[in-house]
Amino acid sequence: MNEQLDNTIEPTPDPEGPECACPADSRIARHFDAKVAERLARGQDPGLVPASELLSLGPTGMTLLELGCGRGGLLLALTEAGAASATGVDLSAASIDAARNRFEQAQLSDRVRLSVGDAARVPLEPQDWVILDRVMCCYPDIERLLANTLPAARRLYAFTVPSSRGWRGVIARLEEWLENAWNSLRGRPCPGYVHDLDLIDRRLSGAGFRLRHRDHQRLWHIAIYERSAP
Image (cartoon, rainbow, N blue to C red; front, side, top):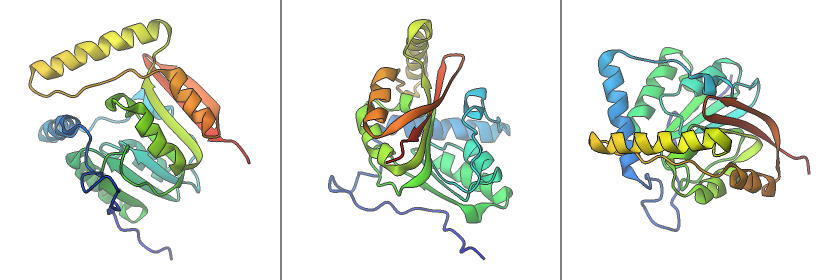
């Protein structure tokens, strides 16, 4: 029988100091904590959005690390589809609590580890497949996020981001500006960013990855990269 996994991760200390595992921008965590509380109060539990569903490659036998796992919807779906184990990290403590409850209800708590942490800073144990689903747009420093997360992907690195190219890029930037303004006006600021896809592609190529699959869902760019054989 496989040994049961503990469902929490204790981040190891970082040379930069004791705050390394905490959100770089606490407004993001507060925004999503409030959002989760509102949905729970209304009894809402929306399923996966179409962009997230497009990341659902066959995970059978692979170990997963989802950064910005939210309430665990995608992570649970991939675990149910045959992943060997799953690890989830998110800035929002309320989201991690909701994800833990989701796995408990599915009776899969023994196959997941969950923790609160900043994906750009917290030490990450390498896994077969790293996923950042609608997460990069929450980070102002994309270089630091990529530098910390790319080494954690042994085989696959998958993400969804607002497209920065063509007409999608123009609309995505306008949409982010309007959403940022609206969140600030209602007292729940949560900055969002449209990062350069060409820069992301260069960093992945430089780290030894090649594009395996690419798609679009509305303004979302969906990409899965595979680490090249040595």
